[in-house]
Length: 381
Image (cartoon, rainbow, N blue to C red; front, side, top):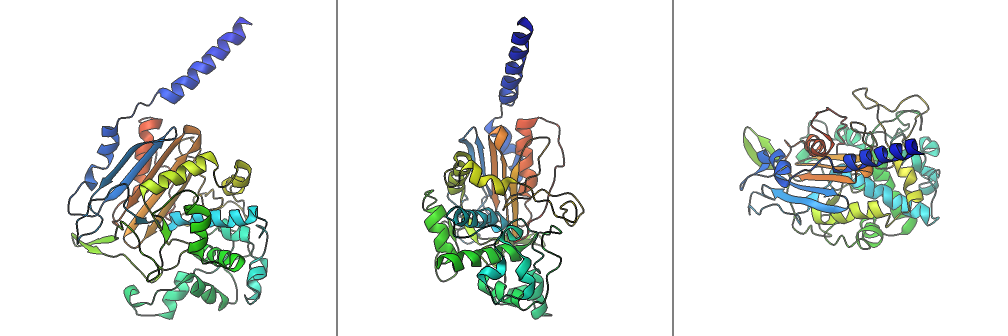
């Protein structure tokens, strides 16, 4: 009996030590972002949530070079591929409603799609095993010798049309893993086909509205406006230039949402408390895909763990769900460590920032001083 009590006491002490060992100050976090401090250059917004409470929320630099408005917690950034977790949630809500199923085929929603779409399921689209051609590559081939800023913007519907013009996919669905912006543009169109609503309206009605994410939206030029908007920037020869839009910036499903730290704190809470989807309903998003052809790998040959809209690779032994976003003038990341009750979100409006590395430096403050390179997949869009 004494031995059991001793063991129980040691376990309890170990747990206590693990949850209290890292006492991190705001000044320590702030020091990581010292290079972004400026009153006349683009920068970033940083949020750290610990044990369910935002403990660090700070802006660095300016939202645009015309007004020099300081970045703060209400500044809205283009999320780029961090958008994909919202697109996946839209599909998951419709699956919960019984209006579609993960193993429904692409041609069930778009009968006119070529034969290669008959074996592509929504599950394949969600976890990047569809083999759909890259719409960005197709688009660029249609405009040879043309600078990207001269190429007309394409919409999600236009992406689907480009894919319908192809005769085959890149590989058999489910056999390989390859990151696919095409797949998430197609998923946005599935939402519209099933509901009859625009993708942006569905997000507002089923996600942003219920969570009171009042300043978050899927941006459609000429149809809505982004409040407290940050503009993207690129540095050329030591000079900042506004580079806010590209030919693919109007595609919503893979990267068209704008949001702020204030609203993403609400999103993080909803994930933690299972506000929109129960723990069981969320499980498919947090289950890594296993292609039939072997391990999922990124272009560098590294193993990848991906669910629905989330990378799932652990970091230094800590369970993690995360996503990175990159598009013209913007870099973003959300790193969630659910067992450690830690979330780090960084939104940058400059192309030389590396939010992924910066977020892991913040995590290191809590996990210990030994630095690991971790894993990185650049999720373009």
